Length: 290
Image (cartoon, rainbow, N blue to C red; front, side):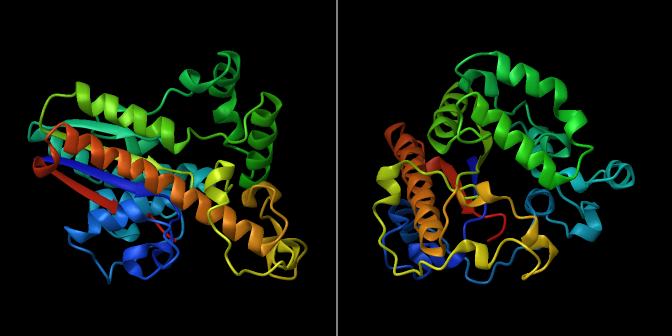
């Protein structure tokens, strides 16, 4: 039995069709749900990806596995605690049971434990090789800076080289996942982590245009900026909304990213069906947090 865990980062439950959304955001997830078990009382343990992914793949609470911070907020003491507790993650267990273990993600660190093949080579998706080589050299220096500053630096850096985002988009990730699964020996375990539904919201225009959500034209600056909503909101970088200026514009972009990712999940399902592997594959679709 092959196992595929698809994590759609920051996907809110109420925006999925099989959980009640009526605007047709997720026809492929809904198609999968028709013949699957749908969990209605599953709750995230945090609103941060490092913490959530560690719990999803270990079955442990943050207190148990020791991951209680996120991104550049990790201190040396945090990292030492994780190493000391050394939680066992699902790919490690499956690898010991003879599975090929594939991680189509770029978070690294302890998230890469137990995989035969983990990561995404950003250089394969650059218009030139220089940007990613430079980023590889400076990323650990950047990690010592406050996270809002890091986000602004990375955003500006990639835009200098003509990129909208620092991440590999869902179409390319799906291509990578299918290729690796196709080349792996069976049985295989695959983690496929889509980031497009996480800010910034940058779907192709045709996906965003699908939705005419009846949302407000209220400026986002009413919620982010200054200290009117607290220090966390004040640090929220403008690019997080994909440069949208209104609540409605940001929501339409968010819906567009959901539709875009859902189409790629459909491609993945179609691949398993065309290869006559669908009955021998367990596909789990989840979010890390809303």
